[in-house]
Length: 147
Image 1 (cartoon, rainbow, N blue to C red):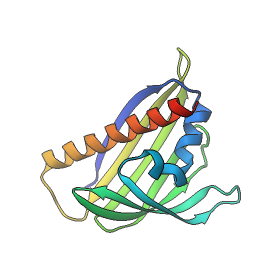
Image 2 (cartoon, helix red, strand yellow):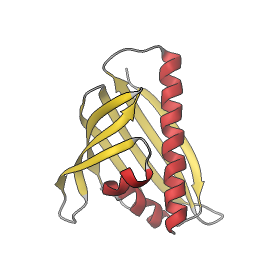
Image 3 (cartoon, rainbow, N blue to C red):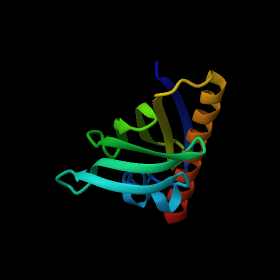
């Protein structure tokens, strides 16, 4: 069974800017510390990455996985599904960008993850929490530094 987690955060930039940074997948290694390499395998008619292979740091080692991106709700949301992974069997998620009442954007990050090898629940929860908090913090920093 896949583990699910959701994080929320406010960003001082419009939703379109948040989406643009999240959808600029080729630049992830510049600002997402755990992402070491990105290879675009396929693009859509607008040139956006559709199928992307990542090499990332995970659990003290390197992992590879391929995600298929869905832009059907752009720029309101960016979703993805795992198509292949060496240590994951599921790594599906979505960023949702909502205009905040006070200006800026309310960002929601939802992730469903399942590993090939079972690990104790408390370790999974700690790792999931760290991954999500780091991803949100790094996205916020990138968006706000380039606004």
